[in-house]
Amino acid sequence: MSQFFNQYFNFNVMGEHFGEVLVHFLQNLLLFAVAAFLALIWGLVLAFLRQLPGRKLMPVRFVTIAYIDVFRAVPILILILMISGGVPFLTFLPHSVRIPEWFGRPDPFWYGVAALVIVYGAFTAEVYRAGIEAVPRGQVEAARSLGMSHFQAMRHVVIPQGITKIPAPMLNELISLLKDTTLISVISLSEAVLVSREVLAERLNSSALTLTAVFFLIIILPLARVVDKLIARSQLKITRGSHIEVA
Amino acid sequence: MADAMVKLQGVRKNFGQLEVLKGVDLDVAKGEVVCILGPSGSGKSTLLRCVNLLEPPEEGEIFVEGHDICRGPGSGTGEESWELDFVRQRVGMVFQQFNLFPHKTVMQNVTLAPRTVLGKPKAECEATARRLLERVGLGDKLDQYPERLSGGQQQRVAIARSLAMEPHVMLFDEVTSALDPELVKEVLDVMRELAEEGMTMLVVTHEMGFAREVGDQVVFMDGGVIVEQGKPADVLDNPREARTQKFLGLVLER
Image (cartoon, rainbow over all chains, first blue to last red; front, side):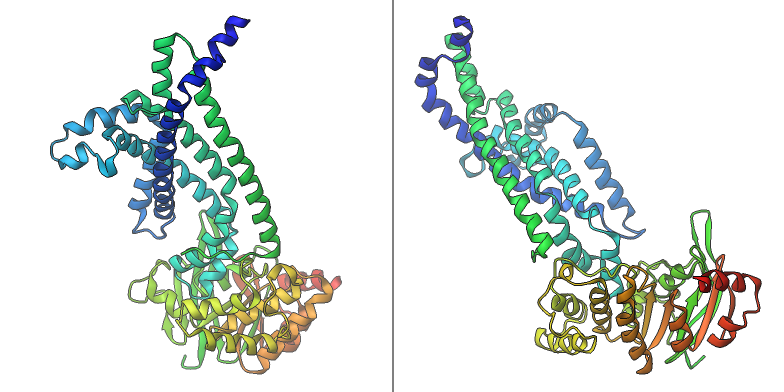
């Protein structure tokens, strides 16, 4: 039993590598922040394209649905490997895209962001869609019968109501996204899991990985609580009738 | 023709295999109140929804103020802009379930469309809204959210919201059917006033008393066609058709 604790909960190993793991965990958080920001926007764009009305825009809807279906099905790891292993050889792309080193971040960081945004855009699009579709049909009909265009009805009537219905499922996606930032370690982005594995290789001890897991726990648990509160508050607002403007 | 505010010719509408409207002709003169009766599934709601193109008809023509709204430039699908802009700014609609915007106050419900669709200044929209809401007896509810209102009050807000777009024709789709019995009258009173002021109205309703008093014409629909139409006294008191007699027998028995 002491062997078990020594392997996973060796406080000496944790202590010695605490600073190193923490600094690299910030890399995961940065990756998360950038990818989440872009995925939330990209998902909204996809959800919007998916809802476009009319016969003429059918191809747009079709392509969007195909995109969402495909990238919800493809394992992110495969995508990460395909992007990092393939994009550098696409010589028709400019050098700064093939080997991106924007804002001083190394290229695996951006390959990782790309893979996460491509996949999580598809997932968040579905969450937005669920919110949009949860708004009763009569709301759109009322808006349209008042002369509003599809876009005006979406902007002033559907989206402000739909968005109050999505914080919980969206949080689940964001938590998954945060955890999936560890996958980028396979393309040598030095983040928390990568350095923890180096410790494992060096000391034959898993405690640094445990420490990394604890960092994730520390971030994710309160996040879940915060959003529980947000949901409770937004529901209170709905019953009182809230006024939420969406640009 | 010149007098017809709304004119339907051979209007057909299918939902998949189901034929809901099987060729409907109807003339509604300016200022006329037409009450449409019929059993559920007879197509009466669909008929209303065709007139403002919420459900574009498959076949036939609908004229609003002499313009064929199914054949405008850009045409026929009900998804193009010309007909929609033309129709929806002339034809107002009130729904059975009110469909007020729950995230907006009473005032915002009424001003939203004039502001976004017509681009009118806020102050002007609010002045109009205040006047309309006072007229429907809700001048003291401007800052309330719909949820705080009774069904009858919500429906009156919905009427004011529709009137804010200054429609030439109003469609009422079973607007009292979702209301508690004691709240029906306050809504019907507003509609009665509107009729007296000369609004052209198409009213799908089960309120026989309203149809009799306010209606200029009563239309009885069944199975996607107009079975009988005429003056309220004729249709309601001396129905010629067996189907009308049967329906009225069932409704008036209550």
